[in-house]
Image 1 (cartoon, rainbow, N blue to C red):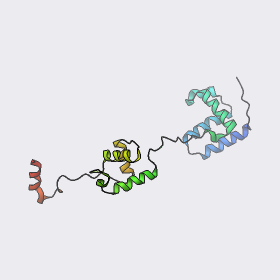
Image 2: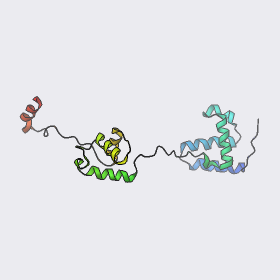
Image 3: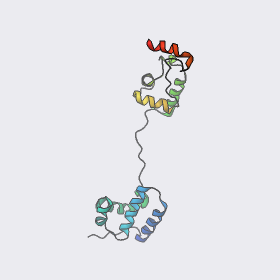
Image 4: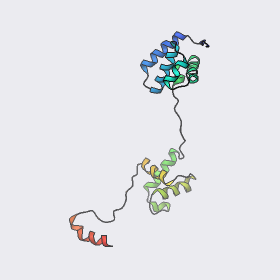
Length: 166
């Protein structure tokens, strides 16, 4: 059994770990800090491993990271995700175009397929129809479908019945 030699003051790490447990709200970070605290206080990685769901190697790595870089190195990093295909300035240009009649851009109506085609021609960026529908919503537009017949009131019932037959 190898006994770890710490580069940092072990008691300072224990005190810092106790302080972080009482201050943090991040559950993932809190779990890691708690497990490291247990190991700093004498528990072994192999004894904690079966009950915590982490491998002994992972727990040993956490101890090494805390010793060399401090507890903040255990904090989860924000994942950047996929970059947007359209820039904010391009989205503003699209919004301005959507506020104009679609005929000015060569379309009969603004919908998913027409917006996809407009973006492809204007910016050379390919967006699917569904993504364009989401973009409408993101830019503050909503789907408005035309009524096939005037509203339902009693005066229009005979005309409504005649309309249904055709």
